[in-house]
Length: 316
Image (cartoon, rainbow, N blue to C red; front, side, top):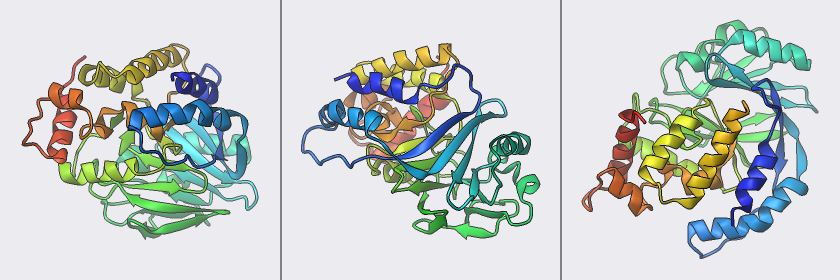
């Protein structure tokens, strides 16, 4: 059942450079529930659901412009064509955002910050002009120009869509994600990466593990927009702790091919992260547990901590 991966390549393939790639929010029919194992269920569902995803999509009113910022960040603009509203998700570099806005003829109205690190809020002050409102985490240090502090389960109306705020603290204490359930899309900042997760700079292992489980509980067909192109490095570590995962092996091959062509590996689908991302699999993969030195006495948060410490010290 590797049809999932070949379809992913076709679905997210873009021109060979990391220049701006335009993505349109899509609505996909919900997957049916199953009692099979997660791997078997996902593989079987995707033999049919992937065809639906690539050939029977209905575009919503929102568009996402993705473009490179700084050395390895991605910038995102969300645009509602009906209302004309445009939101920046984080602001790594004001100049890159201004260029993208001008190129598309969009006017910025919202800034959605996920956490306080400078490569996520560095452009706030320059981009916050009259009429632009800044939304960000209520408990995560200083967010420049913030107008609307947000906490877990808060909702944000943007254009014709509604986003739910998810507490994903761990990388920083108050980190949040923006989840658009109808559009099946989540902007997760530095909490979850393609095949990885953020470093634990401020939070605790129990906090971060709980945050990742909240993301893992979202539907498999959720499109995950993370903030950095770290996937090749993450893939090397993932292979070191779960080399027997055939789905991971196949995914790594395709990641290498994408990067050799200069293509982004972001966004990804949450379903494939559940099956291949070691930071979402510590409680279910005996191979990962063994390779990070987990014992039968370790709870899930401790296993996650050992996976995170392994990545911090990994030199592969």
